[in-house]
Image 1 (cartoon, rainbow, N blue to C red):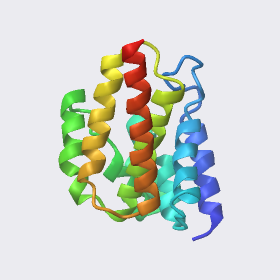
Image 2: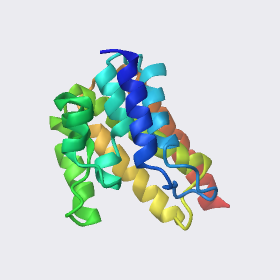
Image 3: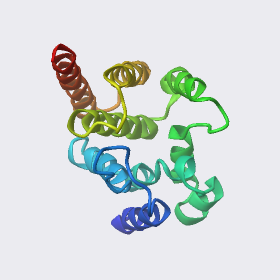
Length: 183
């Protein structure tokens, strides 16, 4: 696989997430998130598997756009589709059920899916530190950290560098939120 697959995935994700924004005060373009996830995998995790990087870019398309698993398979192949589906929530479930499914499913994730999950949760926690979602109370941010920790804690170890970054980012977030609670 070549870098062309990753560029095609970046373009596809940008088009599918067009008009979507993150929940932060600045309403950052949504595409920044999957780009950051793929960048973390490449830069920190030294992931060179182009299909994993493509799936990292596409990880929210089935969940958050009208993209179907078939669209992913047709454009990027079965393995990329399978990775995207492994990390996608089942939207027919309630939010609480989706969160529990992620915890329960974490030990069974493939290596590629764990890499994406590490990048995704690290990126989200970094956003909670740097630019928290609008309207999220301190309690809700703490609950997110607890849940992210429960998911990653159950994942099999696959990449020491990404795992260290996750745990360091989580510790930093807990310190920031503790200071906010004391303020």
